[in-house]
Amino acid sequence: MTRQEPTTRDITRTTLAVLFIGVLIMTSFWILRPFFTSIIWALIIVLATWPVLLTFQRWLWGRRGLAIAVMTVILLMVVMAPLIVAVSAIVLKANDIASGIKSLGAFSIPQPPIWVSTLPVIGSRIDELWRHYASLPPEELAALVVPYARTVLNWFLAQTGSLAAMMLQFLLTVIIAAVMYAGGEKAAAGITAFAVRLAGQNGEQAVVLAGKAVRSVALGVVGTAIAQTAIGSAGLFVCGVPGAPLLTAVVFVLCLAQLGPILVLLPSVIWIYWKGEPLWGTVLLIVMIVANTIDNFVRPVLIRKGVDLPLILIIAGVIGGLISFGAVGLFIGPVVLAVTYTLMKEWVYRSEDPQ
Image (tube, rainbow, N blue to C red):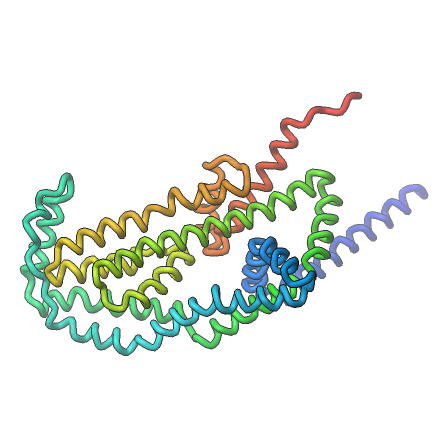
């Protein structure tokens, strides 16, 4: 009986210690919860651009402070400024958009061109629907269109929210990224040491793989957005769509948010057809299809350039992460699957130590 008392005391002490540590962790998460979004995006930006920071540091006589200043300016000018300009332009044009919605009362759809019915498989169906809506009087057509247009406008303005709050969020992300740039090596050493304590050598490999995965996904997301924007903007300019520069900025924002360019290109295609220019409408329609589907091929290829994982795993991580966690899930999904896959592969195929 006397020998069990120390054990009982040790169990009680261990339980209380674990409980106390759990409370500390939960409290810390609760305190940092308002900053989680900025911290995650700053971490992604730092991991993706760390080689660029080191390159600037070599060019600037080894001065880390100067390199951080240059990177901060680049983040503000290249990444944040276009996003803020695009969103603010849309918000400032909200009244004009609303006025355009009110003018839909005189809107009418012309009869479809003859070639529409000759399209394979879907041509007859499109021609039938087109003729149905073209035969509606303007008042009835406006009654169908206006509620949807207002819903889309209200949804977008609600998602955009306060421009000042969005700018503050972006600024906070840049500030946190600058702090991470300054202490990147120490943070990486601390994370690696923690991973080694958890999983030994496999933990260190998992940290390295996670960093590569984040960098690869960032390359895939940004590179794909640039490719989609380039294709979409070329179509907008060639087909003579008004406000092509602003629409290009909007396309880039939508592609970064993984919504795709179709939200801008499809209304543009409809507008060109409505103007009675079927040739340019078809050209822009082809451009829209290419720009909206190219991400399914370009993104996985770019991601795989940085991390050697099965393609199906990368696709599942990107799509599953986006569905589960939103835009941040584009990075979280592949990272989690990459680390899990590597650890499981190492555990399954590791040769047993001789007895």
